Amino acid sequence: MSSFARAVIARAHAVHSLARPAGAVLAVALVLPPVAAALEARMSLHMLVQIPLLTVAGALLIANRHPTAPAFDTQWARALCGLDPSGAAGLLLAATIVTTWMIPRALDLATTQRNVDVFKVASLLLAGALIRRSWRVASSITRAFVLGNMTWMAAVVGLLLRDAPVRLCASYLESDQVHAGTGLLLLATGVGVRWFASLLGANGQEHAGPRTALSAVPPTDS
Amino acid sequence: MSWRNATVLVLSLAASLLLLSWATDGFAVLTTDAARARDVREEPRAVPRVLVRDHAGVTHAVLDDVYSTPETRGTRDRANVPVNALRPRAVIVDFIYTRCITLCSVLGGTYQRLQREILTRGVQDKVRLLTLSFDLEYDDPAKLATHARVMRADPAVWTLATPLHAADRDALLETFGVQVIADGVGGWLHNAALHVASPDGRLVRIVDIGAPEQALAAALQSWEANTP
Image (cartoon, rainbow over all chains, first blue to last red; front, side):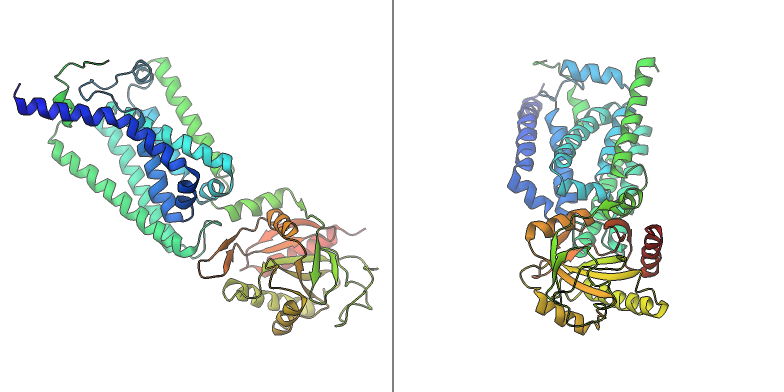
């Protein structure tokens, strides 16, 4: 193995060993009362910053400690994987959770009722974790189905928010609703394009990605 | 696929349906406004009997129909009027603040049309209008009286009032499901609607501001339903 490859792997290890702490820090930072209040003060920040970041935090929290681990380096994660080998159950629930927090009434409840907000945080962390675990094992057809539907739906919700003649959230201003709609449309388009580009970049490999290339090296810490 | 994997998939599906059903109140609504209208329709709410001061300076419990006697109805000087001798009327309630220059003026126009309709149809013995201000600091009886004049409110039909205490106001907003938020330019925004309360003081229907005829029909219906 060349020294360059070793350096690349060492760097990947360093980044991976930081993923879980980073997820924890992100999750804690997001639920700090002043941060949560600031992010929930505007519909656009609530929908486009807080909710996506909570999902990312959930995904980071269950990141592999080691980049070379085949897929799952903890026992419970392997057990979970055995329960849902196709990833379909995990992706279905995760997609539903993300969809739920695009419903105006759910956003209103989260801003006005503390227990709903706690539920929102927990459900989005779970969604992030589910997405990370399930995406890896999902077939390209399942991936295409879930991502295609989600980006399409989010884009349509974005258009609806932009064009709605009335305020849909009792907690938010109409101008903010338009901003949130524009942002959601851009976010959905961005995710869709990014995914499509990764498909082209994968060059026909079924589960392509840098981790697959590294997985030839045996895991050391699991 | 093993039975275990199938079970997990079914559980995931069930959890997903449960979650969406919770968020949409049983796949019925997407917005808070639709949810409260549905809640009230299915289960009318008792309105707390908090004190308000109206635009004639009279203090009374919020939904008390103090001007339903023939002697007091239509008079402009209404201090010390006796509490009604006749049957109380159904009432259509809206929330405003008089400094508002946006949605409240739309509501004001709707109320003027409703007032005209009530008088034209001669149902002022059955239905009345009540406008509640949530701006306790500014909207005193004098301000309300000015607003009533500007709006050409007929005292036989239309009363304007402000709750006496902030806690009472909040209780009213909570019961009616009205959420008031700062609009960022010194004013407030709130979900505006026409709230129909029965003569016995229960919130029975919430109607979109674009459908005053529905509110009037619901009010008349609730008056008939309360016939002794």
